[in-house]
Amino acid sequence: MMIDTIVFDLDGTLLNTLEDLTDSVNYVMEQYHLPMHRVEDVRNYVGNGAAKLIERAVPQGKENPFYEEMLAMYREHYAMHCEDKAAPYVGIMELLEALKQAGYRLAIVSNKPDRAVKQLYRKYFQAYVDVAVGESEGIQRKPAPDMVYQALAQLSSDKSHAVYVGDSEVDVMTAANVPMPCVSVMWGFRTKEQLLLAGTKKERMITTPRELLPLLDRLNLAG
Image (cartoon, rainbow, N blue to C red):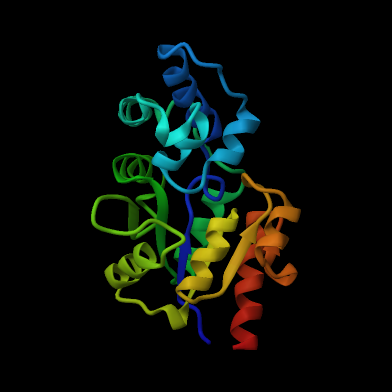
C-alpha cells in the first residue's frame, strides 16, 4: 500500500480544545443551576459529537426536559468561544508542513459541529489541510465511516491509499469501519490503556507528532 492521504481527527489530535469545551459545558450548567464539571470529566464525555457531550453532562441526559434547549445553548456558546483557549499541540504545525512538503493530501474529519470545525480550520490549518468535515445534518457521525468517505471523495483519494490519525476509541472504530489503518496519538484525550482496549495496535501508537512520518514510511514498506 502506497499512502498518499492522511485523515486527521481534530480535538485531541491536532488541537487541544478541552478547556474551551469545558467552559461551554459549564456555561450551560451555570445557566440552569446545575453542578459544574471538571476538565477531566469533559475529557471523558467528548468524542461522539455535541449532542452526546451534553447528554453525558446533564442530569437525566436526553430525558432532561431542557435537554434540547441546553444543547442549542451549548452549540451557540461554543461557536462563539471555540478559539478562546484552543491551540495546536506542540509539533503539529511542523508535522503538517512536513507532510505537505512531502506531497501528502490532508483532511480533517471531526464530530465537532461543522461551523466550529470550519472556523478552527480557517484559523490554524487552511495553509496545509485541503478538506475539513464536521458534524452536519444528513451524514452519520463517526464511528460511522460516512464523513471519512466524504473527505476522501473531496480529495479525489481512496481508502486503499489513506491512513487515519486520531486520539480516541471513536477514531479506532471509525478507521475499522472504513476500513483503513489507524494511527493512535498518545497526547490526546484518552489513555494508552483505553486505546489498547479499543483495539489500537501497539506498533501504530505514537507519542509525538514527529513520529508520524517514519511510521508512514514503515507502513509503505510493509505495503
